[in-house]
Length: 305
Image (cartoon, rainbow, N blue to C red; front, side, top):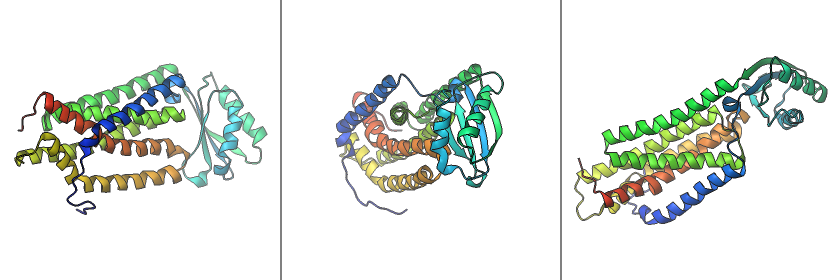
């Protein structure tokens, strides 16, 4: 494996208190933002509404802001307007939280676009309405998916390592989810099913990074590194896998950043969640999960297998 860092001896756990302060500030900012905005800005997936898909004859990517302003002036609630599909199809998906019987909402949008954006003819290709019952079920299932993933991770880590490792790993994952969500609440961006998918992906990535470090800690424990405290053992383990972590992070960030800037509106929020989650997930392995494991060992010494 390519090694960017060789024989490093950084004292990561020495910065744990500063790390806790940074994490506390970010978490408090998240909750403050939620209170300021009066809760989450939930998408149609979770609150119900109307989704419409329009196909235009001419390129429309540069006129997204204009189309959004037209729809916004209708008073149908905060609209989500984004391009979808291949650029040459000139398709725009418009989602509003207004629910109605029949095609009332779609007719309003069509009428407004025909009058104020008449230079670009269009056809309505799809109209879907999400009722409150369906949206409530989606919200419940999304929350359940995240909670079940945490429970499964504790069980998996308890079998692969020990229960303290599972609790330390989940502490880091909860930290990651809160802060990633915080970025969305600060921007008042919509929380959609795509966001939930990104969160589950971030959980998987962060867990993988934590497992690599914990696995090295176990290996070093079995090697019987005498004269080292558990804190020193964790530090040396992190340093030994540092090159792998940096290479993995840079690779993921490169791909996600490309999607964020060049993937279009339809993937921007998903890419943002992945971008933030990747950085925070790596940070939490070093400054949340590892310190939690260290403090657990101080209170209740962890016996090696």
